[in-house]
Length: 348
Length: 273
Ligand code: SF4
Image (tube, rainbow over the protein chains, first blue to last red):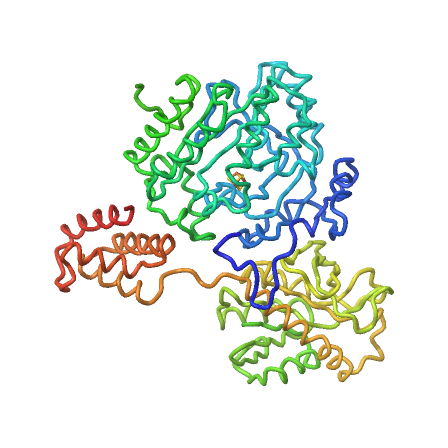
């Protein structure tokens, strides 16, 4: 739970259970996916709405508090469905790098999460018309292959128990070999992932952080060992797995804290089976950080970052030190060509 | 602090007597205050309510844990019992067709309901019906976020208000009031306090600014570094004083700004240790 708010009042009042309120666009209710989701939420209050934007985009919301008791919003997405990957995101050498947002916002609550700067709300929007997204992708695939991140603005596996979206995506990926999907997650959704067919064009990108970093900044996320269990299960099933050490946070004793993480990974994960690994230091667009600073004053947002071309991050020297350290540890586990860093470093 | 907004005096009466409030200034509305609460008597109708809410928040800027409560009687369809108190989770303005959504982030002891706000009395309401809710919410949400706006409506009729006496209105509100106050106070206790630096940390920042002959930009930088200390370790004052000592500046003698800038850079490094 987040230190910034009190989770329990003096007399025992707490925030409501997540998704005890469901706002549903009238148009969304006619989709079978919406019905399935509602069936999984018996007891929730369903409030009809005309357009999700009237709710999600309201000004002056307490997004940090909403995160403690998020409402679910069921909606029908309008095009465009695909967006080009942002400059601060790694493209892993893929030329046609796009992302799609069938869910907006995440059940976890990381203090550094850029979604807090991007969205005015802490509620979660689920778009139920995935067929429209699939149609647009099919169209794009007639022109060129596609590297598509489907879990950028959310954590898809963490919500799969509610949505079942992973199997829809797996079916679609199986039928479209020129589509390469990346599913980013901090979850421990072993059974959701294991239930899927094993596909070469579906990468599970699991983000790991040292336990002290997780405990302090990544509220409600599964432990490191639970995430590594997902990694190991997926690898043993022959899946494509990417391990992400991103964002690395500049904590005191950085090398000790992150050194322990790299050691744990090396000792417990058959790293030779990983597709690749990525590492990056915390970085965020200046606009997002500005918003986060005013809405969530905390150690992460108050840090005196350096602004380089509209992106805030640690100063160059720190970034180099942190990335060099990560690279040297990663090179003990995996060939250099399979290591992707958020910033170019001199080789060697 | 709890803020109550009621349209008519019989609705306000139980709140006024519960808190023993005193009347204060107000041009568009009667405003009553005590240490724990404010009551704004808005008058009926959309325009009066909007003007009254706007005036109240201009006269008394709301604090970070203040809760705004619109409390009043309403019409209701069959299915809602006379005297039933409901917490509103959606408001529709019948005139503009716009919808508004208070965020109910903690459980309510009261039945949740939809409210429609009309420009004139509604004789056959399909939801709870009043003449203030949408204007209250639309104006209040400019001053406080939607999770701190509570609307409670107490069913007084099913479209026929003829038999309703002022005393009956007061009785209905009086009965629901203790539960409403409890609920609002409980939610307020979940909210974060105002952020920022404590008095000691502010004094340390002032001292550094003076000693470094800091420009406005430097002052802002020093304050931000102090906030970082505070949020990371919770001891900004202590750390800033330690820095002054380390720099040999504890004797209180100011230095020139040019040198101050160099020291500020060292403060930045000190802060990141
Ligand atoms: S898991 Fe990712 S998307 Fe979810 S809150 Fe954390 S950083 Fe944001």
